[in-house]
Image (cartoon, rainbow, N blue to C red; front, side):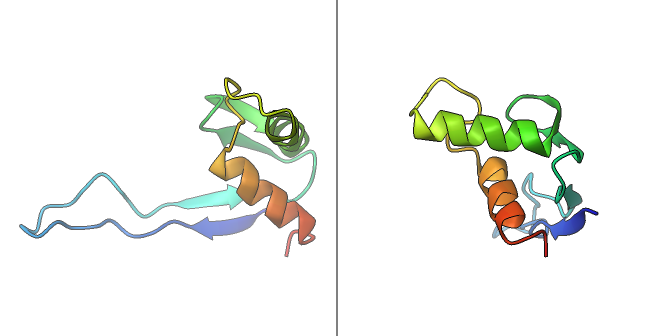
Length: 85
């Protein structure tokens, strides 16, 4: 079961105009077979594939990999390590 991830609300500049950041709710995958949209790869991937790519790219320091230092991969890894709670 995936849990909801709250993103920050839309920010406003000093003149009152909004910037490009919006409030959205995304599903954080918690099981290895959960599928989600990966912004770095620009396609749907399973949590298992995300964790494999993230850990391999960072362990081997593959700078050209889309998974290298991916913030979503890091969030997924921390959530999975915490048991999905």
